[in-house]
Image (cartoon, rainbow, N blue to C red; front, top):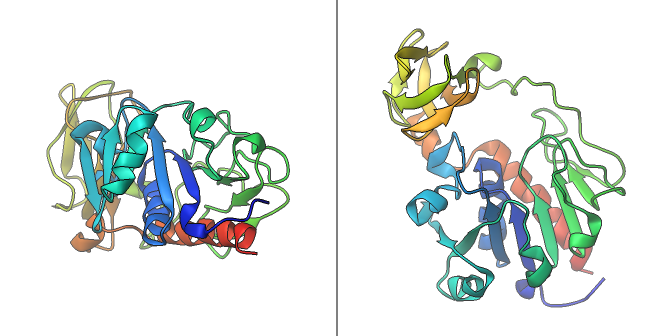
Length: 269
């Protein structure tokens, strides 16, 4: 393994959703050079804490760290010099071939491997199910809520996807809001708004998407987003803490810490 100052390590993160943002935020604050890749039209739910919003708005700040949308690899280093995390529209992470990062983190959370291999970097980390440590990546990190959340897996895979989100405040599947029809998504509330059971939260082609529980709207799709019936489109937090809608979640922070541990355990020798 190449020995070099940790501050010179380049980390490429595939994905810029809320969990990927938690990882990027922790690594950036720890002094690493971080770059992120995204799809052309991100469908983030927890938009208040997703660096993917930079693709839509040019920049996005989460807890005093700012990400900036850039158009090519030449803009990456100038963006670092400005103290910002570059986010590049690059679904296949082709930038890895020219950037040659020391670390690649697949945080797409697709529940399957979309092309990441161990040859992509000196250290390749996969978040959640769909990866095999010692097979297609060097390390896997457990993302399922519970006792093993954030555990480093050096051989084998994370727990399989159950299709049911982890419980928060005693609710699991009920937290998730799904599009009642296919078509244009039009929110009726903003992130941080209080909602009650049965309240209409958004409209899709004249059909209301209603909250299944009471709490605060932690996440919702952008206005005008095309959706398919049953598509995840919002998230209600039953704990009712509005301020939590605008800060990185406990799960994202745990995963960020796990990635940091994996990097230090590999390079700090």
